[in-house]
Amino acid sequence: MRLLALVLLAAATLNAAPVSAQTSRADFEKWCAQTSSVGSGRCLGYLLAAEDALYGNSIDSVRACLPPDIGLAEELRIVMEWLRANPDAVAPTAMGLVARAWAARYPCPP
Image (cartoon, rainbow, N blue to C red; front, side, top):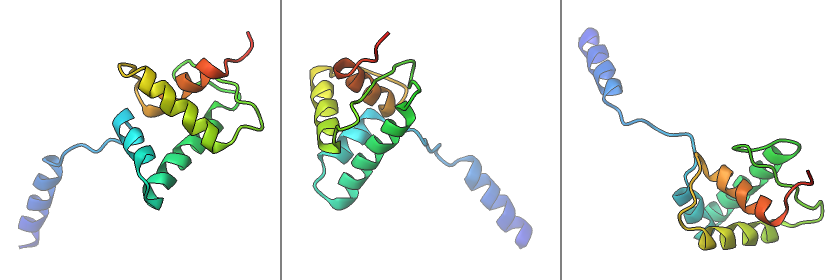
């Protein structure tokens, strides 16, 4: 009986839909449009992660140099305006789009 259960479990695992750990543009826009604390928290958390990732580095070969006194509300406004102005923009993850939005406003010096 246990063998049958293991075989069924293994078969179910093999047929499971793949789960992506990457955040898509659609996911990010959905989170940032929500008024719930969960959606807003995910949105702002994602921006904070992007901010940390960009510090001295690039995302998808894009660098942005945010001013030290910029707030999260301004960071979000810049990204959402850029996404609306660039509806066809794509990147492997939403973080690449965030980096492009910030770089358009705050490019790093050469």
